[in-house]
Length: 208
Image (cartoon, rainbow, N blue to C red; front, side):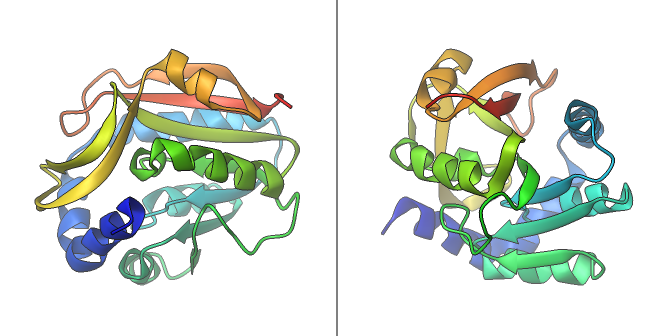
């Protein structure tokens, strides 16, 4: 089975359990600092934001609480269902970040937290091309990734009975992997999140 489809299947089957575990752990305070930093980098009062791989919708809801126009998308039907129940005032759509329905230049910012980690490295360019297409000129692509090397299936404490696909990068590798964006800033999470180290990156369209 395709790695992404197999990983999504895990979320379909264990979505509630996953949400319960992640809501109790992780570094939410730092995550919100990263979202606030993103708004400062944007330097606009009314950005249009897309939350790629929104999961249970916490980040989408955080941006909306700031009064922003934000849409959350996720490939998992179960995760979208959970997000809609938790945050009924937010907009959530089931969609593949590699192939969305949005017109060109729709968004000011694309936020992708803990979602690129499930994209096989050979598929990263497809995500990047779609983000580039739906971002307005000079838009901002913000994402995080797990620090390390390689890729493959593994079990983690957030979903112990399921194997999901994970991709790991060093910062240099990620910079070289991007074809349409230049990373303008990065920040490492000061603590491990469920035994993994993460780096957040802010990128602008630049490479051609």
